[in-house]
Image (cartoon, rainbow, N blue to C red; front, side):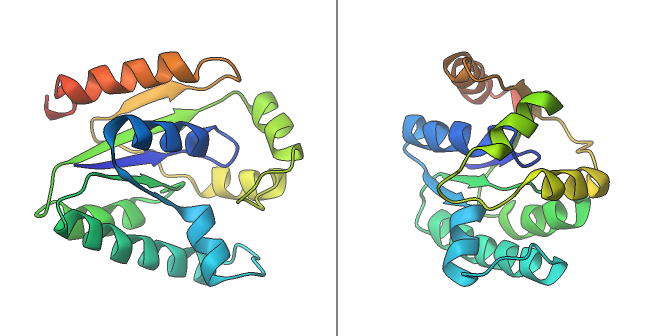
Length: 167
């Protein structure tokens, strides 16, 4: 199974994705960590973003081929990026999308705090928000607060266990 955890910077997707990966015994491929490994000095250019997604796809294919579940943690902000991953992975395993959203004031507050892997600030958030192309396919949407990760995980596990994404 490949689980895409997507959303804007500061939405809480990485915190959620890491815990979901633990619960599902999945490999977690985090775009921020991949970016740090590839590009020590990040400017979030289109070229850099595509380089990160290419590496994430390569890593995901390797994990799926090894029959390991994968949680992909990134914005996945355009249809083209999502379609590229879907085309490359759908024959290898089933695909599930989970979108994490948060109120903009909470996002602003989160992006002021230092974060271990991400350098995205509120400017980056606004840029990606402007370019955001909503996912039209069936998917679970979870609203993140600073206190509800457990209920988000419960809802996600129920969604995954009951195959609700197939309907």
